[in-house]
Image (tube, rainbow, N blue to C red; front, top):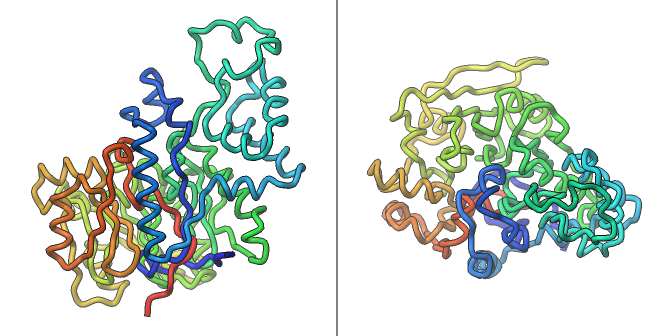
Length: 408
């Protein structure tokens, strides 16, 4: 099938989604380099893959077309000129041109068949993988130096962040941390060169060559009229304004609501502390309720050729106004207990992923938060999470919806 991009809500029945099954890149994690690669622990890959396969199977049982990022990238790189240009861009962004082994590395990649090329770029290239006879510099032989020519991309199974579909267009991310910057290059090539999008004219609401960062986990499309965007550790205020200028008046949206959250790793994106689970129901961490001080919220709306920016009083009031609701149900992570909320938020209890209104996927380990959601009438489908959760992202993080059925 060729899904047409269409995301006008967070909860409309899911029709098509992009995921990435964790692969060899996970096994290139080592204790010495966890920090720069944004991991706190090393997952056990076979168990991680079983958990991810279960996640995919649940979506398929609900009629969702599940597409794998690796397959889409392979399809996009079938033309030799596109493939070569992609390799050169990837190496440039990896700063591989600064290494003495650049020519050998490029030749090594060009010689690989497309499927192995994509797997290799995702997994990283260790110095040990380059044939011994091509090594001509002292740094190639010294084993206690950094082991990789190309870093692995272990965060790639969080397909939410490199891009976000908004309406019938896409926002391709300028990723904040160096460890993830190359991820959105895969998505850019897929959208521009994959045959499944060949018959669509897809507007780019945000381009990855912008100077300020933005990531998909901060972008929540709540209705055809409004989206909420986190101003966070990984998404700057400048990028939110750039996105708003492109969207307002062109996409059907009438407002972009910016929500400032603490710029710390534990609250890395808006969707780690706030997700929509039904038309009037939202799961939230106490931080977005202002319990740790006043929450800064601003609305951005079109005003002639410019923007009108206004401060808003509360998250609840903004949701009521822009979603035309008389009441909203803000369901607290951890059942409202601050200790449970802190513990379960660490394992992404607020990062639910809607299959349909009132039907969400959630990690099984967050049992208090899941029970609280059920007590509010939400159908929670639990997925195993002992290894997937080690990457610090939940079901919403692991999914990039391409199409949702419009809400009635």
